Length: 220
Image 1 (cartoon, one colour):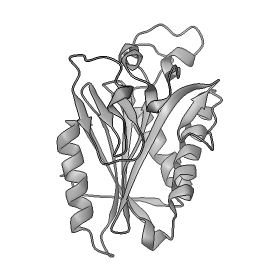
Image 2 (cartoon, helix red, strand yellow):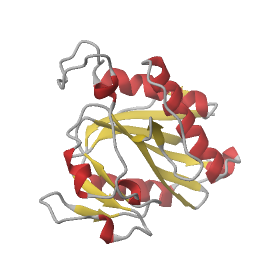
Image 3 (cartoon, rainbow, N blue to C red):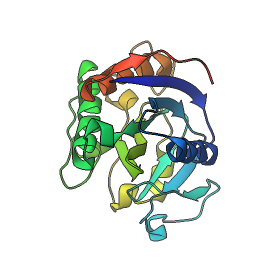
Image 4 (tube, helix red, strand yellow):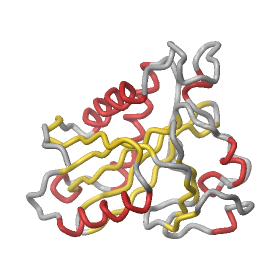
């Protein structure tokens, strides 16, 4: 089954969330599925059952209570976000299998860049030597999924220090740029492809994990 893929650039979190919900509310059994690739301005998001106590101190970064699963996480430029509006009923895809498919896509993507990563059956997401490199939070509604994954690429990780990432006290976080050999903290590093190129790579791994192809779409 084909999926429309859209690269949306830098997007406000609240507006994107509203648009995702509206998409799912309006979707029918015959609606096209979509993957949105984007980045967010700095924002903390708290999952539907998340506890505010995992925000360790108040900062200038806004906190938004979302309807995804999971606890608290941080988004900012330099992090690759993929939201997936999938007809899981039509795909006969359960939540556990969807989570594993998304984790597998990220693990395979990182392997191409010689980064060995793994999932964790007790804590959704992707890890490198115990440090979290990708967070995952989903919502299922009306037979569809929305929200998705965030992969740390080349961002300021300091704000993660003001939260218990994903609700785990002391959980370390990492990112691609810091795992490349002798990589300087610079987005101009020739060893790290552009975010656009990485988005395209990740898209192919997501499609493969979902046994899907990309469907061309008109711009929105």
